[in-house]
Image (cartoon, rainbow, N blue to C red; front, top):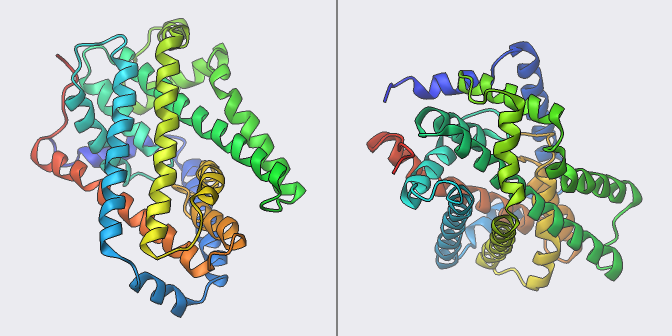
Length: 337
């Protein structure tokens, strides 16, 4: 594998117009930094350091195992979608590619970097990249839909139970973004949207993958027309989200947090959903701010809320290390039988 492959990938992922993309990147980086500063103003630094020092290593190890298992389950979800057309592709190939994409995507300046890397390598190494790439879009849409649906249920529960007072401005913003997210799968039936996606793929991968907009549409519609496959994949996506809630609960338990797991089922879907807002890089500031905003009102100290966010991010970075080992030792797997 060429040494400068990562550099080339990064250059293609942030292709022209470069000045505008640079401006968007620095704007989102600034927003993320400002959000972090606002969160830091709400905590007492000595209390944060003391909380981080009080962590229980055993619980950290358990949380890390759960996070790794959840990532493998996400890989299985993608393989289930893809293998409806390509049953010959092995799960181990997809697992290696997923870990590799997670690792390399961490170095790209975009919140969808993981998917960009997946698309890039699938386009280069799949026997039929059109099938694999359309499966990536189907898998991503299923994941987003499950998060939006869960956030809608959590938001409705908050409004009905009165567990947490949410102002009208925040309520309107959340409701609008939820409706947009839930409508996103339907947007892929629009020829204009599909044409934009096809052009973006050609730019990212440096090759013409789909002969026409109709060609791209047919590959995407294959998945929407196979409802049993999509229904099962959606069920796996919902399980992924439930495990993610449990991840945060375990991390909080590592700090001896005395808070019912019910609060995590109410708040974490909303925090994950808010982290999808395209206003910062990788949800930086949004996750931290969301945890402090929701859980501090439920009785958790702001310092502990931020400590949970910091430790959870640290564990996520540990999970990408197998991808680095794969990149260095084995290279990129070819998606073939």
